[in-house]
Structures are given as C-alpha cells and as structure tokens.
Image 1 (cartoon, rainbow, N blue to C red):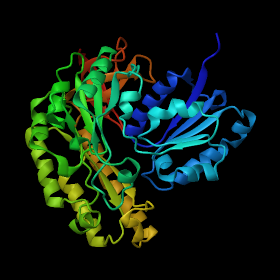
Image 2: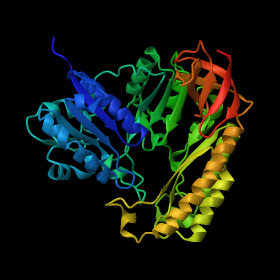
Image 3: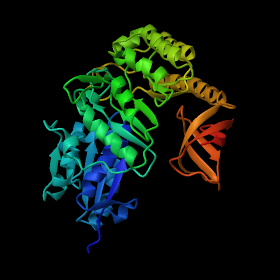
Length: 438
C-alpha cells in the first residue's frame, strides 16, 4: 500500500481561518492527504491567509520566497495559497511567485481537491453560487473538547477601514439544520464546547426547515438542548445586530458562557462616524449595561483601532474614557493600517510617532484592566473544561467560563472533563486553581 501524501497547512489570522483550515484538511483527507508538521516532508504546502492586518501580503510573499529551495528540491510538491489574501490578490500571486500552483478564495475551498489534481496553475476566487458546505466531507472529530463552527460569513457593514466585505463577500447565514447536524456530530465525537463563528455572527438569520428565519438566539437555545454540548460561545458580534432575545439568552441559558466580544473600535463619535460604524458611543455603552443587567458577571472584550485618519487628541481621550467606563476583561488593539481599496486608505494617516504613543497608552490601560479582572477571580468557583495536560506533572490546562486560561493541579484529570474549581492565584496570562468537584 502506498504511503499517504502529506499536507503542511499554515494558518494565519482569525478563528474563522482556523475553522476553514480544518475543513480544507478534511477535504484533502478525502484525497488521501494526511497532515504533517514537518514542511520538508510535505507533498503539498497550503497557506491559509488573512488580509486584515498590516503587511499581510508582504508576509505571504516573504514566506513563499523561503519555500523556493524546498520547491526546487521537490519539484512535484504543490504550493497553494488560500484565504483572504488569495481572494484579494488572485493572479498577482502567481505573477510574483511562479512557484505557486493554486490560489483559492475563502468561498471556493470546497473545490480544492479538483484544483490540486490540475496539471497547470489555477486560480479560483469566485463567489460560487453553490454552498461550499454542501460539497465538503462530513465533519470529523477535532480530537479536542472545544471546536469552532461557522454559522455566518461575509459582511454588509462596509466599515471604512475593513476589507472583509470585499474578500468574504455579502452576509450569508447557513441553514439551521446543517448547523445542528454539524453540532450534533461534534458532540457525538466528544466536543463539549462550540464557538459559533461569523464576521458578524449576531447578524445570523438562517432558514429553518419550515422556511422560517431563525436569529442567533433561537439557534443557540436549540444548540443548548443537544446532549453533551455543555458550553456555547459566539464571536465576532456587531453592536448594531444585537437583538433583545440574544441579550435575554445570556440570562436564561447556563450553557451560554459569560463572555462577550463586542468590538467598538473607537470611543469618539466623530471617529465612529468616519469609520462608518453606524453606532455611537452612548448606544454602545447602553448595550453593555443591558448585558450586565441580565448577566452581572459577564466579561466583556473589544477591538480598538488607534490612529485612524483624522483622530485628534480629544478623539483618543474619548476612547480612553470609554475604556475606563466599560472596564474590559480583555481587548485587542492595533495601530491603524491602510488596507488598499478601502475608503479610509485614501485619507492622510496620523503620524507614526503619535499613533505609536497612543497605542502604548491604550494597551497599558487595557492590560491593567485585564489583570484586575483576573485578580477579581481569585477565591471564586468557576467551571473549567480541561483541554490538555499542563507542563507540570499532575497538572491540567483548560478554559474557564470567562475564557481565562486556567492551570489546575489534578493528577487524575483527563482532557474533555468539565469540572468545578476554585481560583487560587492570578499570573500574567493565566489563573491557577484547585479542583473541588466534577
């Protein structure tokens, strides 16, 4: 029997790319490929790219350049580029890097096996009429107790800084039954926690079997009834798509974890308008208050862009004031970087030294809040889903209800166990705990 072909798969970017990579690996598995962590062994190298952050294209071309000696030594090896940079750049990738054999966008990767069989270079960055999920192999077990599940893709918001509407397309929601079938299959294979994914996941409006349209809250309430599925999360949400029933679900469902990622990007109404966010700071603050009213222990995280074109000292001060008002348990912050083809890219940037100084100041504040949130957990009892053994003998590592990394002294613990623990200490990026019950 011939040895299986080997696939080296490198993933950049968000959780949705992680999910996409898992599905691409499954599609290639149906073609006889197995995953390898050693690139020199690979019969195919596939790079699943992200286009959100600065210099994404340059990083891709740099990595491809380093592949030239390997490709020369193994001329039969296939090299593929997938994801959002592939969607944005298409044939330009082949022009600049002739060693690449195929380029496939995020909506077309179900066609990957056929592309690999092609004898010539091929590009597929269409937005196909068929649903890629209909053409992918049945979802396999992840081997982990937590998994991602894409329910919604694309974006109709057209924020002035963002390329997602151009690389992922318009908002599309997967049908309810297909999501439920995938979730049941994951639960049967030992997955106890799922994170529902979407560029604007709370814009989910999927078709039910009877033709009715389900919102995200109804979907979550049904997922919570699946045996073995004990935890549900969702990301990333948009403030304008928060419906009353979804807020209420945080108070009603023990399976819906007390963690909310709610990007705001800026605390300045003037900058929010320039960003085309279509919401103001007061509306955002009221939304946070509503979540905390139904779930007082909810941990809120957010995204911030510093140095957006036209941002003044007062605009930045408004952002810092919003952060102090909310009190975040976590935050992701970045200096603005122009994405080609977006409206904001045409505007003069804030000076680098000013933007860098503002970013450092903002990150210092959110780091202080993150540490305070972790320290407030000391002495509390929380649930932890064990994911793997820790570095120390007899230690298990997992995630708390609030998505904190937790190390638990538990010599008999096993991955996949959902246990109650008492938090005993807080360190820089994790918590320590002792197990108190199953």
